Image (cartoon, rainbow, N blue to C red; front, side, top):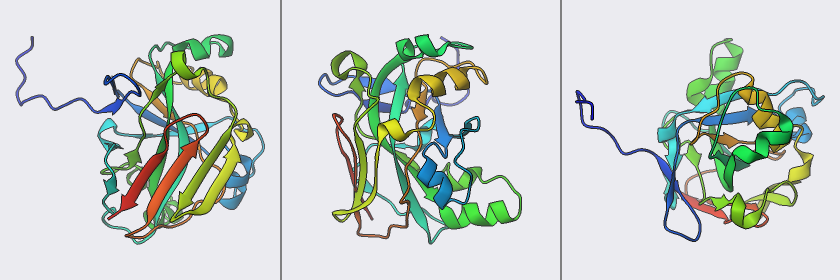
Amino acid sequence: MPDHAIPLWEIPSLPVAGGGKRFPVRRIYCVGRNYAEHAREMGHDPDREPPFFFTKAPDAIFTGKELPYPVETADVHPECEMIVALAKGGKNIPVAQALDCVFGYGVGFDVTRRDMQSVAKDLRRPWSLSKDFDDAAPCSELHPASKVGHVSRGTLRFTVNGEVRQESGLDKMIWSVPETISFLSGLITLLPGDVIMTGTPAGVSAVVKGDTLVGHVDGLTDLTLKIV
């Protein structure tokens, strides 16, 4: 074993449904504007242009029940998404083989400091820290594909205090899960432990302290959090 200069930290991980095991998270890739109506509400053309990606650090993973309101913002938008965890990776993975890489599926929130992002966009500066900060990637437990199959249809729904804010079908993704995996593997080498957040539908909006958030994808465990 190497002699590290400082103590090693605990590897970020997600619980796996029905077994007590945990899935180690290596990297988090997020697909931007992968639902047409969300692209429109953000002021963009929803035509099928090549997907784009941004990242969150693995340490952004949050699996608690009470999510602290982020610092340096007054406009927090949790974007509800299906997440895909990879057990295998590779380069230039064909679409027809992409699902062979999938370990399982879950529900996640791409928490965004929208006011910080808007300022950065206006100044033509990187907006990475509007997306990547402490606890910016709350996630549910994962359901192995070996148990639930490959999730490609069904309803994604996000409620705040019982009110529906986002609702769409997974089949409304502009780029499907296998297409996304294939395209991303042409940009970087995907690796076991990588997690992909597959994009959010229309209806993103602000939350405040005291709100209860529920992210739902048919057949998966709901992601339920309270903002504190």
